Image (cartoon, rainbow, N blue to C red; front, side):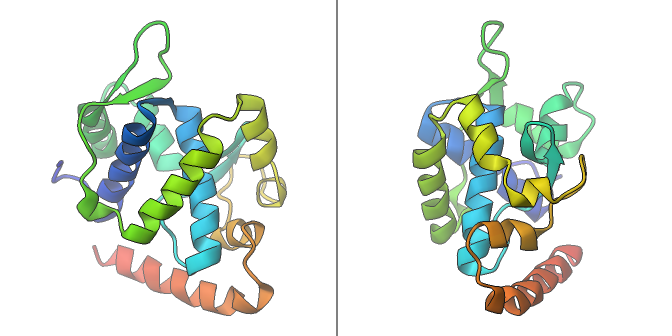
Length: 184
């Protein structure tokens, strides 16, 4: 475990490793989509963020920005990037976007409900085509967000089926989570 990471970053890294362990390796586009759909389900069901990252509306759909930056940072300037590339490797020249785990995830960073939500997203989305994933993720939350801007957790939760009546509770929980994260 990399001690230079915040709790949120370590948790994100362990979730990526969990996805890779369960799938045997996956391209990062599918990792991004599994995380997005898991976040959408988790927000709607538990009114809390599961993925401590912001999803931006990029051309091919929602992308977790800190994770995307870490994957693209091959020089290792970002702490999350350093920890990520110590924990995963590329499948090689023939499949440079496919990531393989170098170690098992530390399950102390993944709650049971998070694991169940990730398992559901892995089962549902890990084998879908690029086109299908793009189509499935280009819904209201993505469409209603300006290009390259952060998609609000409220929009993601509503797209995941959160009832309008639950929005005040979601807002309260998100504020509490943000305050908790700021104290780390």
